[in-house]
Image 1 (cartoon, each protein chain N blue to C red):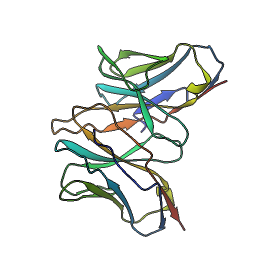
Image 2: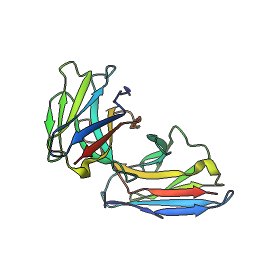
Image 3: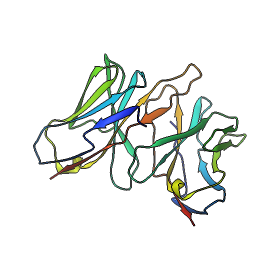
Length: 115
Length: 110
């Protein structure tokens, strides 16, 4: 979805380096999410944010941190990258409706390789 | 959130309807059924969602059984570009996570 952008699209780094992945959205959604995907598997939630002042851990937050700089921007940091953090990373946004739905819209992904 | 069960793979001839099943026998009353697809390693793409009534949009139709324990995503005229992994997800409003599981790999063949 072109309304959700991620930078960089590809990154190769070395063990121990600090890495930041950025996500921006023009959809005007309050909720934003970070997921990782390992080869052949589904997505796992790392962190999510319901608004600028609300940050929550997902199921695999260890080794990661996030920053919600504005409604439109949500960054994911790897403080000290390790090889098993090599994966595809996706950002998503959502805007729950009064009817009870909460459809998520995903960015194109960042392929991160940690050597 | 309820978990889902999908076949790991399916084949479909180009131009024919693709019917992708999903079992969600533990679904509760306030949980919606969502379908997404992921083409190669791109970001998952939203297709359709529903609560209990059948739904149709420009991409697909969603048929939910009366007891809501299973559903079927229908792509009416599959093309080669529909080759992807299709994920069936059940999610309630108050839960934050989309549990993607392993999905169904749909192979559309000429």
